[in-house]
Amino acid sequence: MKILLTGGAGFIGSNFICSALEKGYKIINVDKLTYAGCLDNLGENQSHKNHIFYKVDICDREKLQEIFEKHQPDAVIHMAAESHVDRSIDCADVFIRTNIIGTHTLLEVALEYFTKLNNQKKNNFRFVHLSTDEVYGALDSTGIFNESMPYRPNSPYSASKASSDMLVRVYHKTYNLPTIIINSSNNYGPRQYPEKLIPLTILNALEHKSIPVYGNGQQVRDWLYVDDHVQALLAILHKGKVGESYCIGADNEMTNLMLVNKICEVIDNLRPSSEIGSYKDLISFVQDRPSHDFRYATDASKLKKDIGWKPKMSFKKGLDHTIQWYLDHYDRVSFEDARKRIGLFDSGQEIKPIDNTLIPQIPKEQQNLNLNHEGI
Image (cartoon, rainbow, N blue to C red; front, top):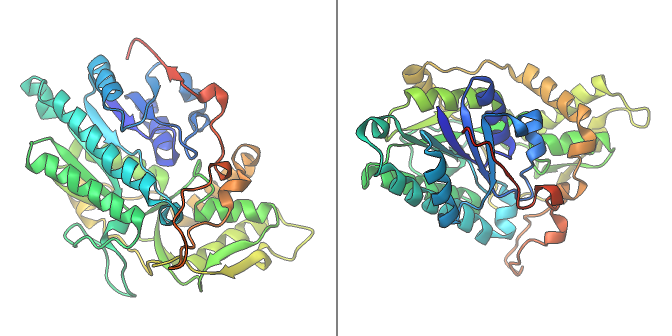
């Protein structure tokens, strides 16, 4: 199967590519290479015979049309997105452009391509859209997200993803494009950009820097290991019902403070410090994020029942593996500027674009880069 994947140089995308290539899939990787995308995430798979890369913005309709026409994909998996809530608070327009306008552009090009396919290829074609459980809003201490819940986003990020979900739904209902929507809980694992909580905590600990915990640290998240997510995506691609949405979670709920403490305990064992008693001593409670959702919990029972998927990685093993990966790759992924605090908007603050000097720049060798393998 030939898959056109958007966002393949990012966290989930790169993990997906590494697994998919191993299973024999052919991947057309479309990624703009923003600050959070890096081809080094693919390792040797950058030059794999079944991988082709295009540095293309998903808002660029003409270039997307050329890629569809040239490679004739059997499916689209759409992962490209701006995804950091704090950044969306500081600069919502980037999220509107990529997550809404970009998704719409991709849907338009996919529909144009789909309508020209013969009946057999139409029956097999799929457009899988990766979204988030954050579109459902926040839970209190009880309850759980499922596919029938109304959307109640509370941040510019989740609002932009909710909007993109609605567009994907509309293109199925109105135009019969065979779409599937996936709403996933928080992912963790290797290759995640260090603006997110787990890698930020690991790297700050290694550098003996303050480990920030928002508010009182009692916000609850459900943590899903990235490869379990990847395997769910592949299962849904083949077995998912067109027009449906599927929630993915792993029943690993814990408060942010509990999570940070667990990370510190693991690093205490793997790399004890002679300068401090425990990395827990670095934990610092900081001003909370505006409109910080209290709790996410995701019910994956529909996915388990209809598709037969279930998570395989225990949280302890997954966290140990993740921490070890960052220890082994520290020189490549430290990105100190990525860990600076943003997203502290208040009513008296002027909304400004993010300072580009705070964003790691794309290496010159990755600019205007296409990795073309004519056989794909």
